[in-house]
Image (cartoon, rainbow over the protein chains, first blue to last red):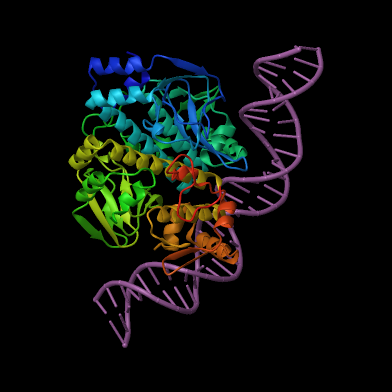
Length: 249
Length: 249
DNA sequence: AAAAATTACTAACACAGGTTGGTGAGCGCT
DNA sequence: AGCGCTCACCAACCTGTGTTAGTAATTTTT
């Protein structure tokens, strides 16, 4: 089964074959979006829940004067809030950052799944709680950390998240971000993003080229950014660090 | 019925007397916390859901080097994430800012309520979605806005939220925040908070003294901070601005 | 009622990060 | 081949905000 949502949920619990099938069937009709295209725009009526199957996407808000802030990234397997359809209109947009494949799960299907499978429901709630925790950590990031720390922290987070769905290659992952987009994510100017990237490269912490991020020294990158992965709640069985390439921390 | 949670949910839907009673009964045993005291601390095992009944509280995270960031405020009627008990440990703390009264609703009661009353369940989901939307707006706030805009935006938000539970007196509300706490909320230094407060006072936009915030010119305060209340989703019946002292935009 | 903390507030200086105005490489058009 | 566009990158200068080091007024503790 290579549904990235199932790979993600496996970080929290084990699901039965029946549950996995039920999820898979809901991801049937998917649409492709090209880089820069909006999946949903601010002000749209809220429809079904979106699931990113392939690619890289973001959630962003615009200020009236044109400033833009990215408030979340989606890696494959990420759902965009399970219950949005309760609200009337989107107060922000979802945009494809790289070319992406997105499935839409209808409200009916969400209700059917959550009414039928308690273990699956718990796993889905876990994923929304993680999403909220990430948002909080981003507030800390822009509020307290300086440019270098912020960027280092973001890269740590993204590596962990790609790894959680098996989309890393060792310490590398595909990350089709421009420096302007990074700036709009970190609350910096594009020029300063450039300076900061160079500082990270000079310190042999990362490389970022051709849409690929490689972390050269994860321990050091975590240390300079005060990165503590607890907020990702990837601790499968009672409070142990996740499996795969398990780390200190 | 003067349960602040019910007053808040009334912004989204009308609940039956039975549903209101069911909620009320779950708020029975409450505890008092004094200013500065932690309601829950980072690392604690997650227990029941907390409901702020009176006072003012915050959610905050600490960095290892002592920096602190407030990532949310709670006004009476606010629940602290409906489903936290799915996670094992708190990745942040909840602290009383002013003296506060907090009820604890057990996981069992949450499950019972949501399994029994669909309309109530929808209203509770609405409140968690609003909480998430506020977190996102805070990312925008610290990421894109300068000191004056940030502070103005926060004060607008708080007035709207106090008003939604009937805890305003016209353009005033009780806000027992020190300048240091404001600094830790807005990602500024305490000194700059002081400067910015004075700028807001000089421009006749607000006063803040003795723990009371008064907004002297809401329209202007909204304008300087690009405040758009849509993200609070207080639109009761189809897309109309809320009642009470209804405003433009 | 004295002592100790906490809080609001001020001034002078320092610096992180923003702004402006560039260059050149790469890439998809026609 | 040439045009337009995007992107990474660079240098010089400017400014918003942080830092440090205070004073004075309140509040809390003893």
